[in-house]
Image 1 (cartoon, rainbow, N blue to C red):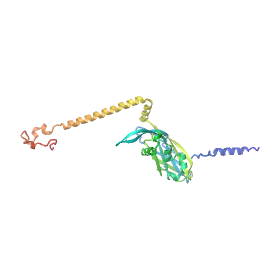
Image 2: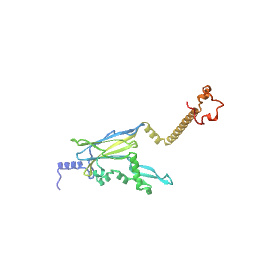
Image 3: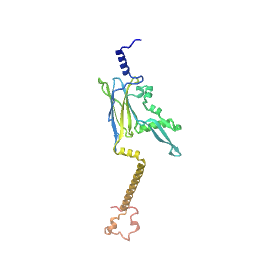
Image 4: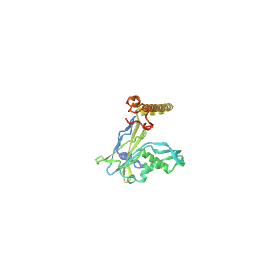
Length: 297
């Protein structure tokens, strides 16, 4: 049996280490997020976010921001005569809490259907991955209504022409995505993926992490609600009662002020000498002003 020369063995080992595993795409250029952490304070209403990266000339880009899968409970409404009522509850899981997809051309023109399914890109893939309980409520209208609701809340977005390509450089073609982070997106760790696409397939992908955290008073309230749930509930009831009493007190004072204003005597009553001549007991009923009307000033 022939022995392999040591130098050749070293070269083969290096080549095996540099070759990507079968079925895995090489990593692309690192992503830059500005900012890398979004802080939700007392006056938080979302904030601008910028994603930057680099691809090779001739490639297209699809950028996906995805939140963790969560289970949500919804009321299923139905008609009872002329009114709508809550008939039952529906539990939906397997869908991301946030899904933002930015691309240049339509997704089906950029990637094949099998690739879209593999990487779970697009509303159709979310539609397939959803799990609905109880099973008898697993209907097409429920799945479609869920995606419509998330789209209205701005946490599901599919934005064509959302990627801006720059001028080619020796290092590659820069691209960027700029948008306003949705205010309704909950605190969590979000995954940002950039797919470099060519010939209807993914040739490389880059992953970055975006953190959304609560700070200040909202963070303290969230901690207090988790650690002292009973006391938090009691305080919420007390605050609601105080607010109700305050509104009632304000309304009663405004009402008394209005009554006092209407009961204020007219100048003719407080100064009889200012009354016009002939106004006295001999005044006939026809000469009296109609009831409910006030004399002109």
